[in-house]
Image (cartoon, rainbow, N blue to C red):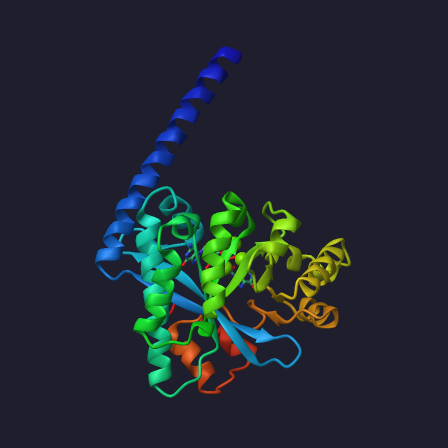
Length: 292
Ligand code: C2E
Ligand code: MG
Ligand code: MG
Ligand code: MG
């Protein structure tokens, strides 16, 4: 019986492997088609000043809608794209499209706040990455301070010297640098001090349990203290409730991002915010991001 069980497990294992490699192939070819057929788009999630409630920034988040697979989440396709050069093509799309959108809003008479884009390790390591970012900003006549790049701790620690060189070029031009998902990766505090980082984003896993009076309050306070010492701004991610917001407010967190305020919005939805139409929280929710 055990023998039979063992063979079934092996068979199951092989099937799963096959499923995983088939899934990867489907996603890779789907993404290539998406790049060629304009099936990629960006959503813009606003960030608000915790104390004043003013609109202070936004994060561009990639969306892919495939005719056969439907909406595929970045949590599914980014890790697969990161295994190949596909991530560079996606990264180029995100950089160009977000700068184009900023320029379009400015041309329409709006004053958009800083826009953050997520960057992957292969992009950061690619020769001429900082120059590419600055060239794209110049092409769209955008002041560099309108852009921020989000990196993870683990990415920065991969090759701290190279990372610091890239960050130095970007920050001295005025581009912001944020550490995304802070607290979940591996990083060394002594390196952190030496890196040109302007913002820390507290990972949503720490924000999640804030209202329960657990240890996460101590972690969040520790991150805020560290950031203050290093003269970095702090944004909390995944803020969903009033209780989380009021803790973050009393603890002195600079800005907040999350469903409590708004999901990632389609460009028209974000433009309504820029026009000063501050819809109520409920109307943010009734304007789901799936609207094309
Ligand atoms: P991230 O950069 O940490 O993005 C935050 C994620 O949290 C987003 O998921 C966002 O939709 C979600 N989120 C926002 N507010 C809330 C909230 O209140 N509660 C909860 N539970 N979640 C919230 P999304 O858009 O599915 O993106 C997932 C991840 O995929 C991102 O994590 C980022 O690592 C990656 N990603 C997304 N767009 C890009 C991109 O353009 N380039 C790269 N390299 N990675 C991207
Ligand atoms: Mg991010
Ligand atoms: Mg994050
Ligand atoms: Mg994340």
